[in-house]
Amino acid sequence: MNFRELLKEKKLIFFDGAMGTSLQPYLPPGSPPEILNLTSPQRVKEVHLSYLKKGVDVIETNTFGANRIKLDKSGLLSNKLKEINYNGVKIAKEVASSQFVGVSVGPLGSLIQPWGDITVNQALEVFKEQIEIVAEAGADLIVIETMASLKEAKIAAVAARKVCTLPVVCQLTFEEKGKTLFGTDARTAVFALQALDVDVVGANCSVGPKEMFFIAKNMIPFTVKPLIFQPNAGRAYLKDGKTLFPVGPDEFSQWMREIAQEGARIIGGCCGTTSAHIAAMIHRAKDVFIPPKKYSILRGFSSRTRVYSFEGKDSLLLGVNLSSPFIQRESLDKISDLLSFVAEKGCSFLNLSLRGENKKFDVGRFVNFIQQSADIGISIDTDEGSLLEEGLAEIEGRSLVFLALQDKEDVLKIAREWGAAVGFNIYLESKVDIEKEFEKIIEKCRQIGVKNLREIAIKIDFPPLKKCNFSLKEKILEIKKIKSHIPTNVILNLDKLSEEVADLDFLEEFLLELINLHSVEGVILNFTGIDSYFSALNSLKEFE
Image 1 (cartoon, rainbow, N blue to C red):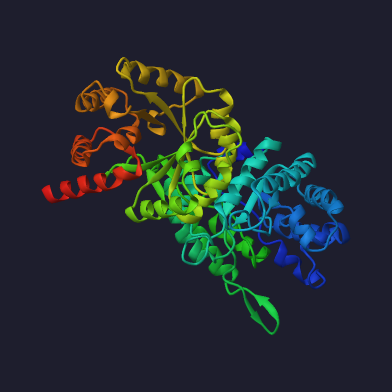
Image 2 (tube, rainbow, N blue to C red):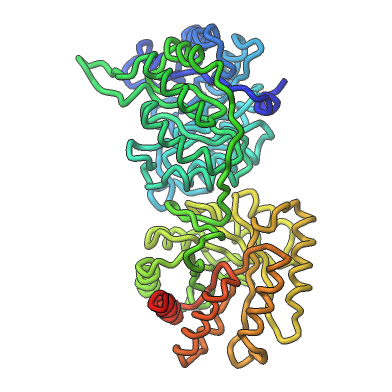
């Protein structure tokens, strides 16, 4: 049996408890626990055995901080990196019999741009280096954990997939108020993580089991993937120069049973938990029945802190188009002012229209500029794979990528690798048969394995008003009719149309009609059309 087969069984899976705090008494001041893989492997082995004797299914290696950046910071020579990681797996393998060995992969220990100095490419290479070593050493699964940054967690998960096919567990860490250090709440986190090619998602560290229970409640209903929760034994405190944890085995096990009953598939412990905590947890939770999950699947995209669902009932998703010529023509100060205006108005996303753009455009830098200026969703429309990967790697939430049917396969592969929601373009011209274009997209979805058309979005690009030799209202009614038997999400790109409309009252009336018809999920405008949209919304509210 392998770990993926274990996940298919309808039983609760038990992970071990803390490694670092268990080894702390044996470490010289300032030394990282990973050094013991070289200097005192028996000590590490004893920690593993203490958990194995209590009946865990998975033990985690002593490799949490064994990446190049963290090891360099601790003063260990980088040429020991392979030995430390390899030994970490070897030590665990020597004591595990039928149990699985999960490799602990922690954060880099330095922030990634734009909040720090580490580039995405550097982060990707560092994670790939560590994960490739442990995969070759015989690990059964990769456990990415204690990630305070959703972006860093995504990079680590993508790195794992680039170098191995092992099962991947991916966990964020939350503060007591239920958000990460970067402001991501549990619902947004699980929404973005589940879109990646990982096997299990969840949370660990930072908080105690009581606080973790509420994080679990906010994650479990919003993903079909198995969930893991490994809290600390409460918030650490110092007493007489010693680090202590307030939650004992009995209280810990009570809350872990509650978390299991909510629908967690895997439970374990993190900092401050001991073999006594894990023994109590297993004893109390071993008979928990895994209930059939009731899902509220979210489909859409997100910023770092908010999910934008295609199925929102209140209003349309409002996007603002940023074309490459506009970006390169305007100053960053002006764009920054416009982004502040967009955020203040409550727009949902910015559409980066980069189709036909060459590779020299620094899309990653611009994405970071956006994220520092406004917390807003980002969609990307490009036919250039390297541009797309550069942009997606920087996005802190879940992006939306618009493709053309003729785009190369690598563009779709990159979008999926980074967990982006996928959309397709229809370019509206007078002779275009919209229904046939829909059917072509449906066929493409079949080819790429999309089973539910609600998972995608179709962006329909309207031409400038002077080239609209058709009735706008009739075209919208036609789209609504098609959607009655082809249930998917439609976003109208009215950027060119709104740019050339001199009569803003006309635009407002059109948008009001669009909202009333409930025919599409979103619209994309240029900056000048935003006020018209909100005027239309206000008119609707007054009418109601």
